[in-house]
Length: 266
Ligand SMILES: C[S@@+](CC[C@H](N)C(=O)[O-])C[C@H]1O[C@@H](n2cnc3c(N)ncnc32)[C@H](O)[C@@H]1O
Image (cartoon, rainbow, N blue to C red; front, side, top):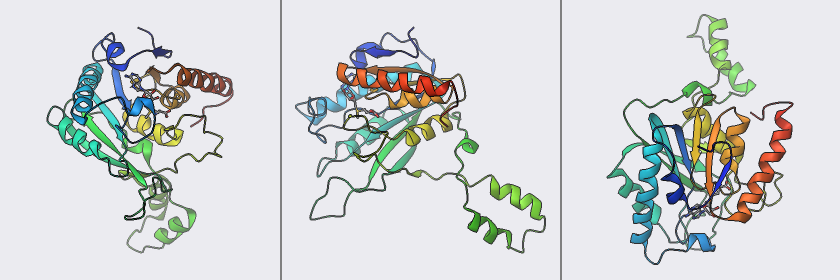
């Protein structure tokens, strides 16, 4: 079984070759269906075909997921295209719903004159069984120093030292995750039209896995999941069918390989 090496091929065919119950989390950012003007996003004649295809690769991914693992699936809505709403409902007929995360992209996209500017994407989270692994402490968010000082003045808390320690640990993240989407000028941006920010993927990895665990990404694109996983001491399995994107991903992995000799990215 090839791990920590990109598998070039079709997601469904390649997933079928992977043993069961080995991945601690699946981070999938599949084609959205007619949202982007890219061949890989417009390859289905009807939304029913897309839903059938989705059920096939999701079923294989769930087979590969460990019993206490989590499955994350990104979905973006288009100007009026909304198949992801159907996909979420459809998949919940077959698998256990766990959560719906909102990725707050901070910056709007897909501008349109007759409605609010879209600024989020959704991440459907499914689980294989009850009580999945979830590292809540690994994704706490720091309070700024002003807030800490303000909360410390709260007279209800007599033990100031304990209170300070508690506040310095930060607060639990909500399921609205704000990470700015990558602008063209970003150093991270590498030429893939729907590249996800490393900080966002790192958060999903941190909450759902421990060091040494395997993260599976069936649609690796520019390699974001692999780069984040490797930087965080996780193993990864990544599949991508487009050879140009595979080259971009390999280059990104080579680059962090150099940095990792000195320090971890996260
Ligand atoms: C939304 S993008 C993933 C972007 C990725 N998360 C990143 O940060 O770069 C979806 C990817 O799925 C790939 N893809 C489309 N159909 C595929 C298939 N049948 N098997 C494997 N990869 C496929 C596309 O080439 C594209 O790179």
